[in-house]
View (cartoon, helix red, strand yellow):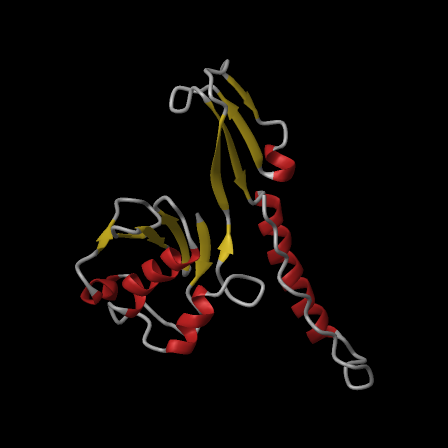
Length: 185
């Protein structure tokens, strides 16, 4: 799974979304996100511009880019190639971030059932052993911790405020904004 956002320069409105193609489907969700389904995976597009990307196995970067091209470029929702390139480039340069994945390791024998979620809140790692879906495999679920995303947003806001509020801005070299934090769970 990957998480990205539509650039702010791309202005779109929810009711006007549906002339862009019949493949975008309305959902009954209260926050009115819309769905794109494809043979490569699916997209969830929220009113805020956030896009959740779910790619079918085996997940590769080209599949993510092709799925985004089907949903945005081919339907005419995003027409500027530079904006699209920024959308599909992985962070810290672009807007697309890795959020989570499942990894399976075959042990060759049936394992006892256990779930280890001790590291879920701190590092975003859960280990499952011997569950019904994979009785002979160790399943590692890696995700970006939610606190990492919140800290990243707060740090961006803090740097912007400090740049605007600095009285010595004319005498001191401009402070460069740090690169976007890159967490891999």
